[in-house]
Length: 116
Image 1: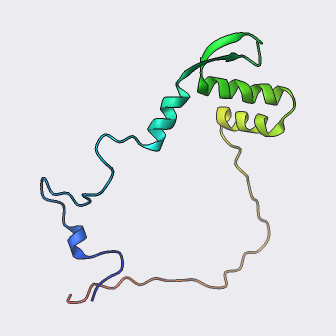
Image 2 (image 1 turned 45 degrees about the horizontal axis):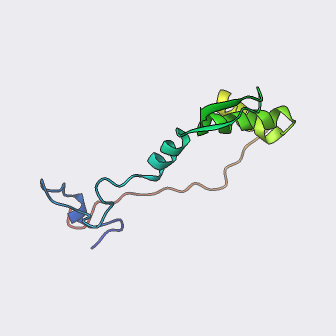
């Protein structure tokens, strides 16, 4: 009986030199995160919204400065994003007082594979 989630062949480690996915990502191709990091590190001249001066800064720094500029003008969402990035997101506490009743419990029984 075949089980969901694959076949026993998938559980055997590949032999040296064997390619399990020959049509996968080509060697040397860049991932999306690598491309984004590359462009966020690119240097560009722009006006600093805080100092008002022209500066050569990485794109990532310019984005953060832009958010700070928006927050200084009263943009609450920009302020929240900066606070979350700088200090971590605030976790919500949920308190419950009173009784808690459980209406159902699901139990999953693991059975051995056929033939054992």
